[in-house]
Image (cartoon, rainbow, N blue to C red; front, side, top):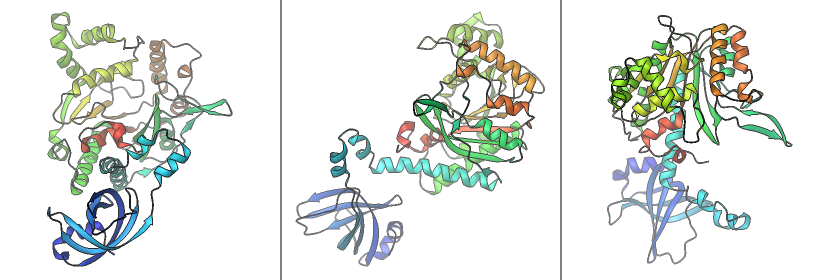
Length: 429
């Protein structure tokens, strides 16, 4: 038995030859007494032609095994004229949904299409190649608990887990504190691909840590990851919105400091009111802090929003470095100028959220002071779970090595290979 891919690749030499293959039916079209079927296996597709059929039991979703002769159709499409077939498994969604409920039928049946299959395959392939890349760098893949006893997500809204009407913990919004604990006890080069929950949505996140990389070396690691993913996806014929040479050459990544980026973007609008970058930041904080719901934005959210306003227009990869110290207490201060932190964000064209990379803070006294300032700025009630001591506080207090860390929503990266479609289109569930 041949695979569909093998038949398609060698089709010219197989014309007139009887072959046997199997796959899933993705569409059925009737023309008088003929039926045309698109059969797919592992992405590859071939047309089946059934001649002189008055009845036909095959429907979209069914798994079939067929035998027939390779021919070119009248439209010169590679096809198999089927002589015999075997129904391996039938997709009975119509009957089952009518039995259970009519609710959400379209959500499931409309998802069954070649386009949905391709988009989700892109998402799955990115996970596969990401794992291969980090394993080649001697990183160990780890798994940490999804349920947290204490809330661990900054100012993001906590999502609780309940059992028998009692709150038993929080769904994680980040994997950082458990992973940093693993580094602290000796698992030093690690990564994880897992789910985090932010607001009402579950996100597939890539996160990793190593005490052996500084910020510059870590940026190069992520550039190498992007290069590797681009090459592997190109081998499979996936088309990216970004030209591949922008991934493949380090020199094609622009570098700009945080203040430079924000000044470039807002300077023309503000005009002569601002004399230096710090005045600009103060102006933006005072005038742009209130979001649509009227709540005060956190410093972290504000810092990222300012940058995201800029990167929407970039045409080549961009690294933004020298984030101000007020933007986050999670990263170490720059050793040359303590007004900045060891954090960069790396953006690809078409993304509004980039790779977050940086050296994690391990000075407990400095971290505690900055966290206290951060929480005061949130203006939340003292009994709010976001105001509690976090597990990360304890891990840093126990003595943790300075370590490079990185994080990215992988589905945002996947958008580059699916015509910049919505992230939700990359998820089956």
